[in-house]
Length: 68
Image 1 (cartoon, rainbow, N blue to C red):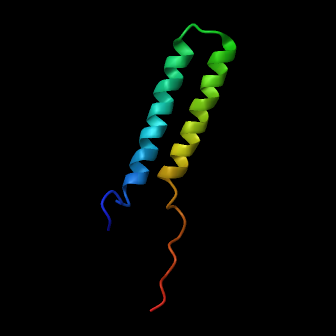
Image 2 (cartoon, helix red, strand yellow):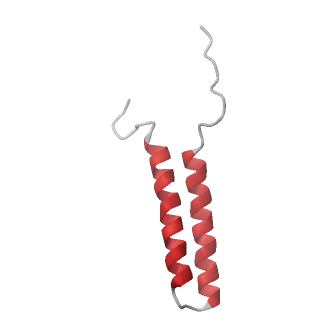
Image 3 (tube, rainbow, N blue to C red):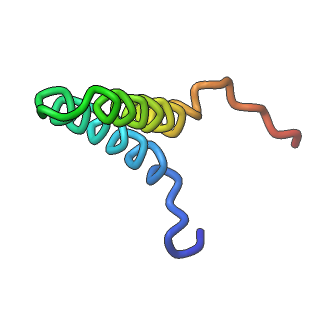
């Protein structure tokens, strides 16, 4: 395995993206800012959370068996 090519790194980054999106959306929601800016930032947080979910749970499919 090459340096920096650890297989469990992607789910960790995905989890961090989800947590960051959650914290960011709470901060944006509580902030008194223009509605258009708040809505745009919430959409960005939603996209980040979906990307994090895909990174975290990308290995849910059944593994393929290797032929001997």
